[in-house]
Image (cartoon, rainbow, N blue to C red; front, side, top):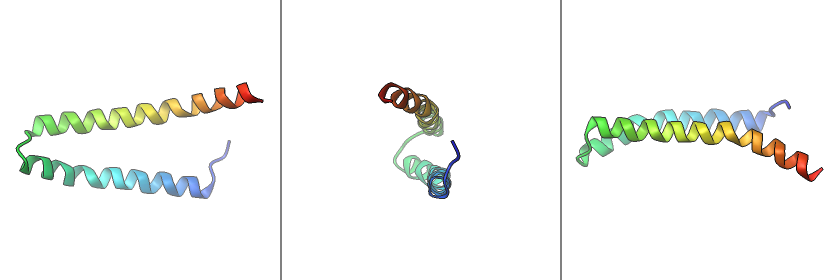
Length: 69
């Protein structure tokens, strides 16, 4: 399956938003009393969860399409 231009654009801007929000979120949380260790742990867990959701999605999509055809 070949990705289309709109899909590539969404992927690019979603990655840009995620990479750009991390430093601002870290500063915001630190200003509200969070420790750097806690902030790093939460951001890492969020990134790992997001990656796991993206990695698992295509396989579920393929299984659903195969079952309905």
